[in-house]
Structure formats: C-alpha cells, structure tokens
Image (cartoon, rainbow, N blue to C red):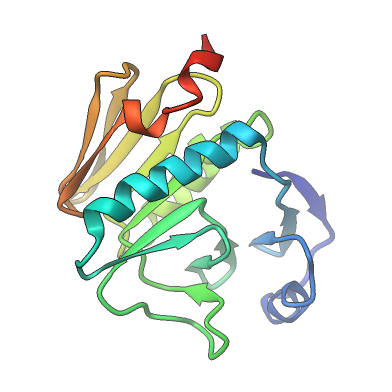
Length: 190
C-alpha cells in the first residue's frame, strides 16, 4: 500500500529518519514514499497467504517475513513487500536487522493506491534483485494472481484467476491454492 511522497533525502538520512517514524516509508532514489494503512481485505489476504505458506514451510529452512521488514533493492532503493521469504540464513544490511538483503520470494497485495506501482515499478525493482526467484502479485479487488518467476536471463509470467487455480511455488517446495488465499473475501469481490 502507498502512496504519499515527501521531499528527497540521502540514504543515510532516510535510514536514520525511518527508525523514528510510526508509519513505514519506502525510499526510491532520494524520494520518500509513505506507506498507507491497509484495508480489512488487504489484511485478510496477507494473513491467508502467511498461514497457507507457514503450514507448508513449517520445519523447513524457509523463513517468512511480514511487511515490517524492509528489503534493499540496491544502493538507493528500499521497499517493504507485504511478505518475503528467505531460504536459510537472513542476510541483513544493518546491525539493527531492519533491512533484508536476500529474499528469494516476495509478495505484494494490491490496493487502489498501489496497483500500478506494484505491477510496474516494484515489479522492475524486484526483478533487479539477484536473490529473488519469484514475485507474486495478489489483487485485492478480484480473484487474480500474477506470478513472475526468474528463468535464466528473463522473467516468465503466469496469471491465475479462478478459485480452482493452484500456484506452484517450486522455489519454496510448496503451492498456494487461490481458494485458500481468497478464503473469506472472494464472495465480496464479485
């Protein structure tokens, strides 16, 4: 969720300033972007995703993180995915463990204010992170998932739009049924 822009500042200033803020802010090339709070449906979709993945990844080397952990895209870009997954040990940029460097899987749940940003800008940012093998976009307003996977030097897109669809996540050795992701909210999206 996003989007209110603030004045430009350096990366060092942003990182120091961000620790003192109640709300989260992303940092893109000097621009500060305030993250807005989510809706009930947005929250429900993230919880459904986390529970579904958590059950399957329990007792594995995969670690799921919520949107409270920032991900560094590069030297001048920091974002907060709605969900991220690491295989093995998390590599952190800082001693305070606020910025993750090595997610292999990231998820964004769209909102009216973030839809374009999630589908275009953040997609391109995530594609630039060498550790990321897959990017999943879950639509808040209808049953739809766009699943991007890295395939050598390019990215492949698979679209899912039926509650009968199951998204295979081979990089995590699990799968996500859309019926589980949209449990409790699909009927509100007709």
